[in-house]
Figure 1 (cartoon, rainbow over the protein chains, first blue to last red):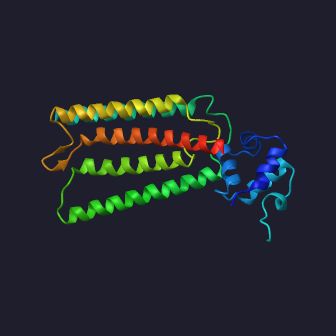
Figure 2 (figure 1 turned 60 degrees about the vertical axis):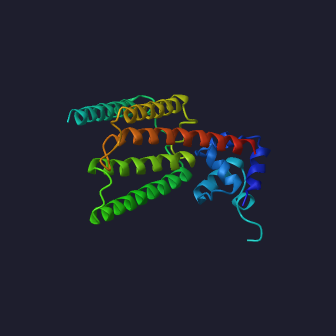
Figure 3 (figure 1 turned 30 degrees about the vertical axis):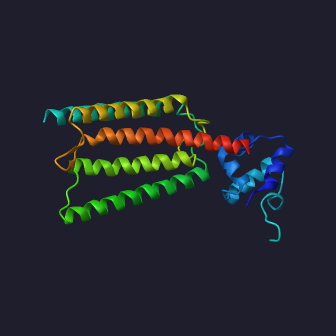
Length: 66
Length: 178
């Protein structure tokens, strides 16, 4: 399932996938895979992404209705 | 016998060059910079690639063993062994390249020199193979695949890696455009 909240949070800060990837220490393809829903990141990576984007885990990664 | 000596010499030179290249790249100053290697997604993909290539090798050895038990000889021992090794290494490399887990995160894109290297060597070994077959010293003699199959294996390996990289670039471009 696509993670559109991550994509929009990244776009809101005018960050490219490459820039976000560098901030959290992963490859651009990993960020792309997370946004497309092709890869489920570990909690450690989720937290790093939330910190980089200034969001909480609920805002970026919790599915609706959980 | 002289054919085998040439083959062994060629292999020794090839492996020697690879070993020297490996030592130089490990000792090079740029490499010694501390940095991240593979990220978690890449490690996961590489683990799957290791498993797949290991299972391929296991299955291949089992099939070879069963054929041997039934007295079905299809290749010399050296050819059989190296077909298995080349097959599993090629499979590992292709899976890693397609999953973008071949280069670590500090290498942002595939260098063109790498792609040119694999294409050139793939074409070279294809041409060598065709000329050997044409001159009668192909890899299939007396009903057995012999050591001359190395040229075919090298060609398949190099061209597979080149094609996997091309496909990977196309997939990445399509993903970027989305």
